[in-house]
Image (tube, helix red, strand yellow):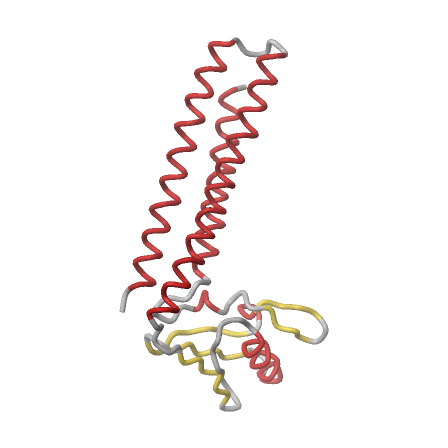
Length: 185
């Protein structure tokens, strides 16, 4: 029973890390990355569709993204969505493809991005700790119902605290890596 809870908790904590890493991919660094725009929602014939479903996104140069729509008629819709987004990029439309030139980040913008990353890291830490809180509550309920002994409860609490600390440390490692990437020139 405790092992099942441990497995479930690890799975939920890993999911929190996966969400964090995916979220951080969308935060701009000094280099162009298709992840910056692939989740951008485009109004396409009355429904919202992510850009990755409408076009191929490539990186022809380190500071440029090339968006080649599958359907040429969607070009204007994609261009409008990019302009309306909070990316702060101006699309260059040549009738067949859209080029996004990424200007170098200013020092102030880099600091703002690091703050944003730190907020996302804290959200991930809270998510990991919430998993621990839920599991510890379940364990205490099991102990009250006499499904596990007091000794098993103590051992399980120690194990869950150890696992939680490992995942919180992993969040910090991911954050440091992203921060370093942002601050690179």
